[in-house]
Image (cartoon, rainbow, N blue to C red; front, side):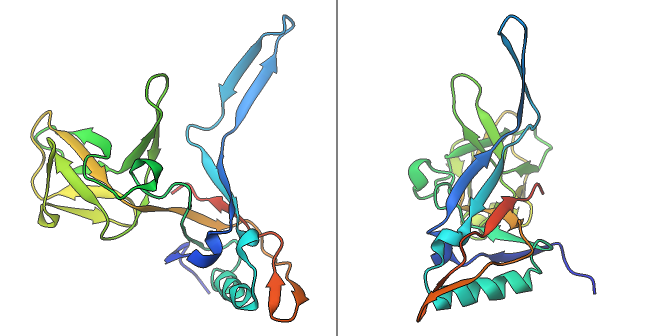
Length: 212
């Protein structure tokens, strides 16, 4: 039986609140005879890893994770994950505003732009591609003026914003949004512990970000 490789559904929010994890990078380091180092980034983009096991405290929570795991067939099918540390375009997880993040500049003919989020500023800002925005949360401005929802559309599966009318040449395009992280389970086996009556836990539920 064939399955889709991604389900547009979010991991249970009440369990994700107790999770831990964050961005991972890969750097090769060669130490020369002089003691100096040569460092090379193997990945252009970071990849996030999480462990959701810390959020499972009750039998009800355990049952919901088992059902979610089984429907995703373990590592087979991806899904959405709410990173409680980083889930909006605004700083400190504030409410999204249309001027939050620059996503491009108009050319007079280009109508589609990818949502991005920029980290850092002065030295080497990192631009993260946002592929899974939350439907209904995206706000967009052109030249500092917010557009009505009829002025653009957003593909919630890719994070691409398409304008009804291509922005004028040189016009700054900005956006605000909520977003999820596309992930999959990084195990094909759940190790379930029933520690007490009406209580249970899964010590480790590793998740890894999908590059989509």
